[in-house]
Image (cartoon, rainbow, N blue to C red; front, side):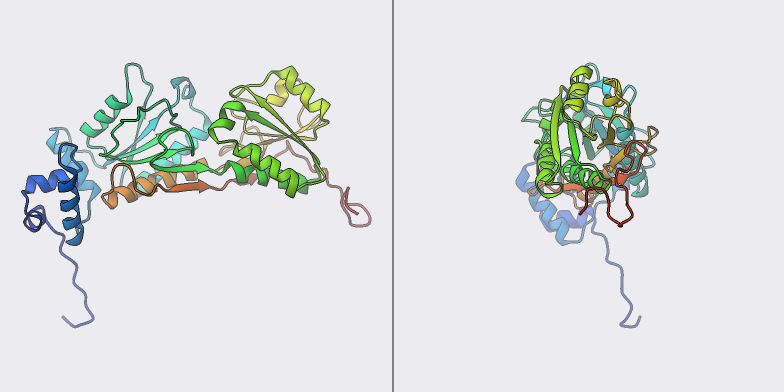
Length: 363
């Protein structure tokens, strides 16, 4: 063999790691699998030795050994659990944005040699402790929590056996890696696009529940847009309860403020402006902040990137598993997905170019 050729490194075995660490092979196995009954100091020392020897966890082997130990049929691929945390009514039928999220996660899991397995936190008779114990017994190491709330999990919940990621920024499980849509930037994009199309009177229709969960980021972005993007414009905010607003109050708000366009994330269960008795876009234009793939309604607005969110959530989990990192991370990662503008008939252009080449309102 000439000097330019390279040899492949030899993967360390349980026996070689045990000899180097001065422990038994069974202790090595338990340490590498983050067994809850093994002392933290022992786990730390064994993992440091394994890493120094070049040990890398193989997800196929992990899944295989878990199934063999449990006396169950061997699965062809290791699983990542997607835990749906909202009330069950939110999934019957499941909303299109969540379909996008699950589709992205499933496709990415398959691409990386895993499979996605859906679970429901609020299934009758269930509890967080019971569900996580089921996952542990099934040999599942990777978990994605979709839309958890602060009240869903007790403070003492044990996530040490799992590589975990959560959607959303502020609410629920604040100490693990998270992935979220960029609600702040998406509002700025929407206002800027409306301004380009000639709109000057803007209304932001908010769900009080969503606004609080996002720490008022949409509201803050709308205020910033009124100062920096369209300082000569008129801006007004109406907050509904949860994902609903009283139709007559919405109608009155639009008319009293002479709004030209309503911007809102409340487009999941229909168009609230149409429910108020007004027509779109004849009476007022409409921009949705939470569109999904396909967009059958033909709304203009922002597709926040739920498909990409699913992919990135899986990437984070798989990276953790590959690095043998489980439990609460020392430095949680915050991944924010930028949305894309989608043209639609609900936002016709008001910017008319005249003979002098200027748009209406320009001097």
